[in-house]
Picture 1: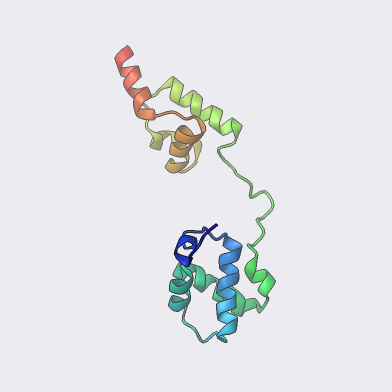
Picture 2: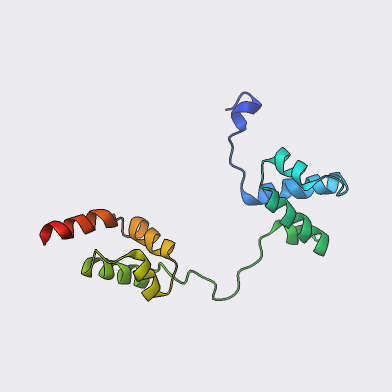
Length: 137
């Protein structure tokens, strides 16, 4: 169990805790406190404070301000599902020398999505596969 504030300092506050603290700071100071003061005191980004203040002042609804906006219907992950991962895997196995940029262009997604899919989902290293393919030829 922590014995000082310094030991608790590294605690990772979840998003709702951080949002609550920002709203409390705004309410307790009647909105007269600057965004930068709140951000530096609470250790959240300035942009987060700006967004929360704007939402609170637009709606004056604390509950709506604290909760994330619900996702639109059909806003689930559009890529990196099993079908997508298998597609990327086949592309890599067929031609390991093919660039991730070209794969992203063909699949209609961002290059980072391909990188993440290869390294996280497939747990492969594209460079190693490319090297192995060159050694075979």
